[in-house]
Length: 251
Image (cartoon, rainbow, N blue to C red; front, side, top):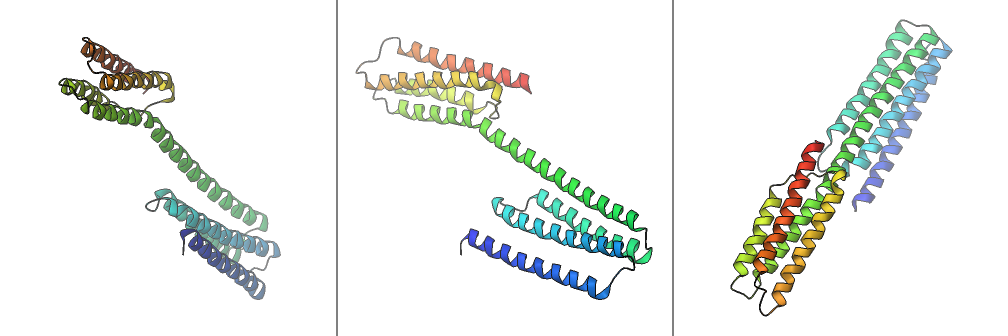
């Protein structure tokens, strides 16, 4: 059975359990008549049913979210603790304020409403934090993608240089390898403000690739090929240093 089918099966099972619990709760309240005040009775019944609905909703949310992470998220666990605490407070409020102290119906309804609003607010805060954290992780992953691509391109250029059938192939490989090391020790986390500078780096690396590819097809390289290659690699390294300075200034 696929993960999606299992998820649907579990969701269906949880839904059946939720409906059964809800039905038992309503039946029990009407059969046993837990409160002498009709309004407190209604408020308690609604509060308990809402609490059960919150548990059901969070269970479905957990089921849909958990397969997307390698291990249980601390945010999910925090939400589960909040839901559990909310249910406990609802039940404690019903026992203490409705059945024992027989608090004024309006005050009792206000207390249950405050408990509900507080639980929703805390869950929303946890959800907002989780969304912001996930969004930041996505931005960081996207921001580091450019430098990873540059490193991969330089690695390919170095391998290409190694195939040059010429005595100077070692020198060419060293030039590209030195530039590759400079990239290796640069901060991988970038910033949207650096997009223009990193576009320049991409263009320069493309020129270096074309330069190396041209050397490979020439029967005899130009006399100044070393100087030209050095100039290209120095230019790329200079732009990379500028990028690193700009990144440091943004932090």
